[in-house]
Length: 501
Image 1: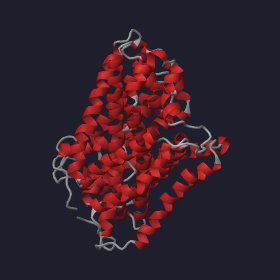
Image 2 (image 1 turned 90 degrees about the vertical axis):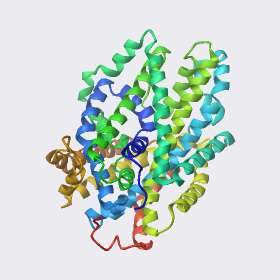
Image 3 (image 1 turned 30 degrees about the horizontal axis):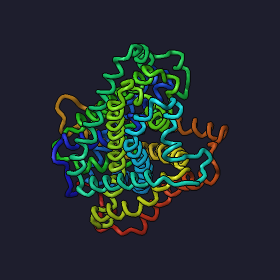
Image 4 (image 1 turned 90 degrees about the horizontal axis):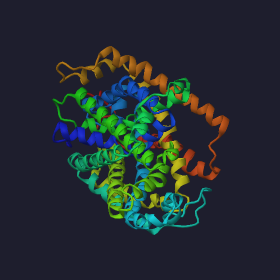
């Protein structure tokens, strides 16, 4: 593995860029609002330490020890583990397609933020809230394709160009890009948080966010959602961290790096929640806060931003452009990380240059994502995101925990994590209990709960959309690995020997 991050800070920045994304800026605040604010935060923070950190350390340590991506790492633990590693990588590719479409939406919103803010004084909150979906995308709730937005299509292609620029330079390019895709969004979130705290009722917003509603603790849905969010938020079990771990220089303290990544992920989530709560409370829109990040980003935030500085449309427009540009950076960085999770092991296995593979993937995938420029786009996003980023991740998480937990080499992983540590170490017993018992138990419980809910209530989407962008994508994720394992001949003998560096 010739690619390396140039420094520990480069690895941390790239990893934070992979972990911190739209889920932190949009989905996390929505879940806080839905599940009692402080109650959700308390359970999530405990789960982050007890469940998220051990798996994050395990993936990074596997990547550095084996010098490869998820398929090679899983194969080193179990003979049949390679297929699940490839499934995680393929799932990340599909997630990248969703993020590319959302990045196009966000860029389109940034482009139209100025005219929207200029027109805002003559528009009602309802008209501003529907500005993107009604005026730009002309979206339909029934999933029927009856129109196409050339503006959104052009913005999606711009997103793919930016993604390719980040991909082509490998590890060095990833760490450089992360300096902007991490620092700029966080800086703007801090600014928006300060502005939100200046509203007269900001204390009510902070109370709603941080003071636990103890009546919510009796809800099993709260516990399972908060516990499950840890796996989704840290970008674990999707093949990203093993790939990044393979770029990690020798001598790096994995445990300290993981602490920095998890802390940044949590702090950005809380910061985004402060922004959302204080801004919407200040604008009198607290009743509009919902668990859907899509609604928050494209229907609620535009109203808040257009009213942010009252009649000063120039400032409102400037904040709107900067805010959505920052969201676009988050989406693009996350998508790049997900594509890297696939390109890294496929390049090594097939012997093809990763830059050429990146060109091929971008050229083939960009036209597919133009579906997000049609009137059916919101429904397609809802269906595909539920299957790819929820159902599939649950199954992949269970498989990874069982592979790591039942392997004879689990003890070696804790030693790899602590190989260059000094005083602050990952407790070996706590690591084993978390990976072998706690994490799989939580993921299996969440899967069973969702299965019961699905049987009782159904999905509520048209059947053709479920088949095309739901069940069909899940089938591809778990069937394509068989093709990769049996048909793509490896250029080296890493499938035929013990995988030790």
